[in-house]
Amino acid sequence: MQFGIEALGTLAAVCDEGTFAAAAARLHITTGAVSQRIAALERQVGHPVVARTQPAMATEIGHELLQLARQSLLLQQETAARLAQTLHAEDPAVRVTIAVNADSLSTWFRPVVQTIGAEGRWLLDLRIEDQDRTAHLLRSGAALAAVTTDPEPGAGCTVEQLGTMRYYPVCSPAIAPQPDEDLSAYLSSTPMLQFDSLDLLPKHFMDQFDVKTPPPAHFIPSNREYFDAVCLGLGWSVLPEGQLQAALETEDLVLLHPTARVDVDLYWQRWRLQSATLDRITDLVRRAATSSLHN
Image (cartoon, rainbow, N blue to C red; front, side, top):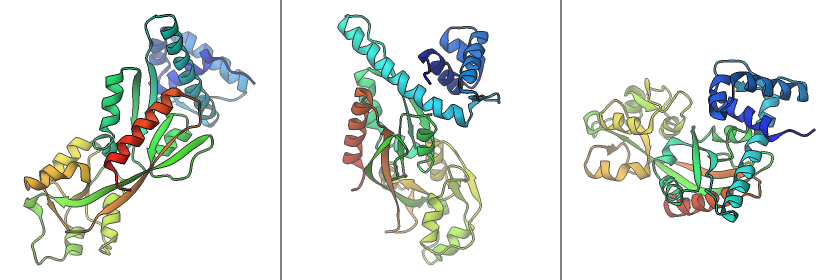
């Protein structure tokens, strides 16, 4: 069974944009043309490939085709870029979808973004997700590569260890425990901050002190505002090492324990493709991780 790049590109556009109308605007065609292409693809495979929800999403069968779509579009864009160089025409930018956690993006991953911007050869589509869940975006076809905590490569993917990201427990001096206060009691009674309800990093720290009753939690799914909220005394949390140095020096934050920390091993997974784009970005990620993460 063979699938045309036009149909695959339309599927990717619908899944990216969330509606047929938005996909049509991106592809510069009518909404009816998008519907016709998706319907033709569904007739070809004999199953629905897009769930008509708000937003529209790929079905289980659609996810299999979405993986093919991402890979095919990347290779097509790379070929177009090489042809443009040969013909001395304008070099079209290649779009690359990468799943990365917010803490990495705000710390050690920054040089990757900086270099990609300086080289000007790619358009980034960054999908921000918890490091425990980024691998799902890769396996579902939503991303071509991912920073993840999962050491097991998905089917058709490669994996390499990047290093260890280190987190420290901190709070504002305004809500710091008293010198003689039991830390376990403090942790179970003082509000904490989490990125969302699935953020387990504060729990991993509490487990070190046998905290049985979790405290009330504030949810702030934004890295910069999360950091600011800890500094403002909304609650305690664990923050990445790369964010802390200045705040500790100015005493905007204090450590809850002099030596306790949470270590998170990070991996880089990518599709096993002969792609100069993925090779170059992998090299940038590897270099950034080597210079900032712990071995």
